[in-house]
Image 1 (tube, rainbow, N blue to C red):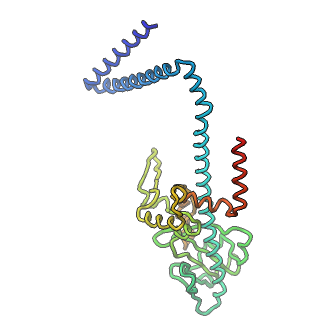
Image 2: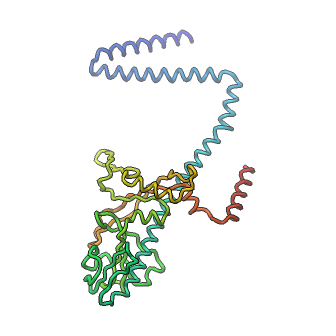
Image 3: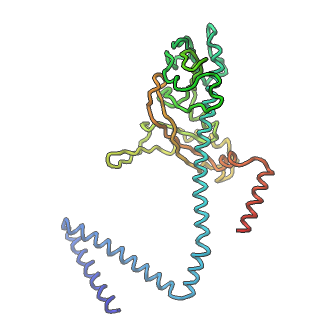
Length: 337
C-alpha cells in the first residue's frame, strides 16, 4: 500500500514538474494545457489534504459520535431558522406587491369617482374644475369634441374609452381596470373617464397630474419607483447571445434623500424594525398613449421598498386581545414542539 502511494506521488510530482517547465517556456498551446493541468493538480492536492484531515479528525469513535449528534441535533436548528427567514421574506415581498396594487386600485377608484362627480357639470355653460382638485385635471366633451378643460387632455374623445364601461353605476360590482397612461415626460399616470351611457362620446376625462409614484407610496405606506423597460436610466445591461437584459438601480440617487424622509415618518427609532430592509420587484401596466390608446409598453417595472413594521402593521390585527391570544397559542405550540 505504501509502495503504491509512493509510486503515485512520484508520478504526480513528475507530471507537475513537467507542466511547470512547459508553462515557463511560454509555448502557445502546451502552456495553456500545462496551466490547466497544474490547476487540476492543485485542486486535487487540496481535496486530498482535506480528506486526510477529515479522516484524522474522525479517527476516534467518540469524535464520530459527537459529529453525528451535531448533524442530527444542532445543525437542523439554524437550517430551519434560515428556511423560515427566507420564506418570511418572500411572503413579505408578495405582501408589498399586494399593498402596491391595492394603492393603485384605490387611486384609480378615487379618480373615477371625481370624474363621475364632474359629469354633472357637463351641462354648465362654463365648466371648470373645483379648486380642491389641485392634482386632478378635467376635460369636458360633447359629441366627441372637447368643449372645456385642461390642455393636457386630448382634444377628441379618445377611442380607448369604449373599451371600459363608463356608465355611472357600472363600476359598483366590478373592479376598475388598472391601466397607466403616458403623461408629461413620458412618466406613467392615471386617467379615468365617465359618461352618461356606454359608448357615448360625451363625458368627462380626469387626469392625475401629480407624481404617481409618490401618491401610491403615500397610499400604500411603501416606497414605489416605476419606469418603462426602455427607460434610459436602466444603465445596467447584461447580454445573453442575441438577448439583452436591462437592470435598473435599486434606488435612484436623486430620490434617495426623499425616500429617507418618507420612511422617517413611520419610524419609531427601532433598528431593523424601522429599517427599509424589504425589497421586492413587481410588474404592472400596460402603458398606453392617452390620445390613441396605443400600447407604448407592455409592462412597467416597479421596485418596492418597505420596512418590517409596515408589513406587521398592515398584516396583523391591531386588537390587543387578539394579539394576546395569538401569541399565547404560539407559545403553547412552541413548548409542545
